[in-house]
Image (cartoon, rainbow, N blue to C red; front, side, top):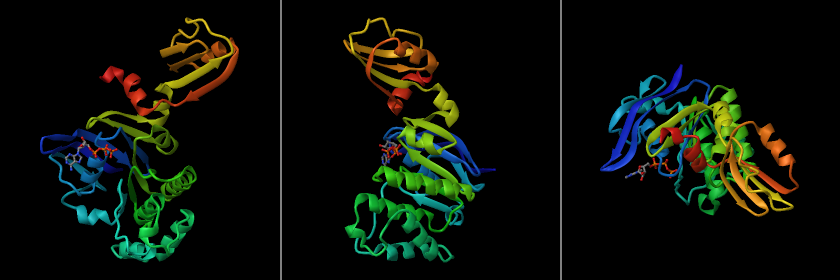
Length: 294
Ligand SMILES: Nc1ncnc2c1ncn2[C@@H]1O[C@H](COP(=O)(O)OP(=O)(O)OP(=O)(O)O)[C@@H](O)[C@H]1O
């Protein structure tokens, strides 16, 4: 069953482009990544889904119900973490979370304490005294305390240190195992790759592609940077699959797509001082993997 169904969703802000003809579905039990650079339209899509803004055209359904018409009915089953969180600074964390919980007709106090434990958050502190990362944790707990069937997270990891990010991802995986469907927006491909089953890539308000993460991984480039003991021949790395080759005496950098074994054999043929192999960033993927769509 589709938990989210978005059909030809369009939002125009006055004369400015928001999103244009977005369509995709998120199936029950999926962890779905929604990825794109700043200003691509991720928050606009999510806010329309939650009925926080009205679409200019198209429709969106959650649990088969219309997001605008049936908004209040479906909201109880959704946990939402906005990209920016604003609070009444004078409140204590626990009071704020209890207040949030009062919107749902169930006792969430045990779950609040469990989540605070996992995320290492002091419930007795005033919001005012919290760091940016700790405020983000409050938002995460707020989104999860009522054990929602659908979790929508808009750039949830910004401000969290790597250890917290890992704890947070483990928490999401657990929620997913218990049956929650998750929509997760980000501009960092590697974090989406760690967590999601499928991903939709949005660029300038339009969906560029929708792929299984496994397919995306196979088709993307790796970035190589190599430092050699002696200057290498300019032609040495000009082999099939190499793009954007830059050489400067004892260093060579390039993007590579193809059989990694053949590249490793090539590298083994020279005296290496250092090597870096990295995932390309989103812009590089847009420039190369999607150049056929441009
Ligand atoms: N309230 C608004 N009024 C006018 N234009 C807006 C408004 N909100 C968003 N936009 C425009 O809509 C486009 C999509 O913005 P949106 O915030 O949805 O992108 P995003 O992918 O979430 O980006 P980010 O990662 O920076 O949050 C941008 O061009 C933005 O300038």
